[in-house]
Image (tube, rainbow, N blue to C red):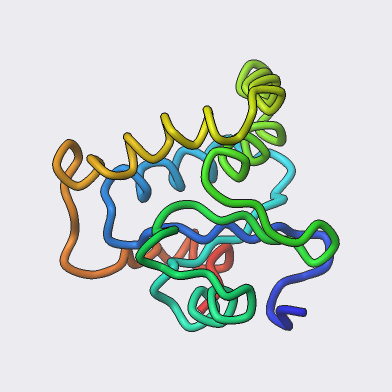
Length: 139
């Protein structure tokens, strides 16, 4: 499907100009001991390609998206909790919240997403990964 994504990896798309999102991605990188994830801003070419392929309106879903060739797409709270599931103890315990109906989880998620720029700020352009992290990011 997405040619640049190795079959054994999962791609996290995130808002590249959001300070909270960038901090979250750095947190995931730090705790991704199995090197399972790759990353790309929603604003990147691969981000735009996935949004278009799955007919996702970026004005309605401008937050985290988790994609893998074998499991397809997860968005919002489902994506965040599925990422946490792979980050080891105790973060993986957050996956228990997947039993909560998505409309409830996404209500909380959407509230935070709606206020994230006001609370945490926004960059003028997407984060540029350091040379050490560059291999984890897809263009």
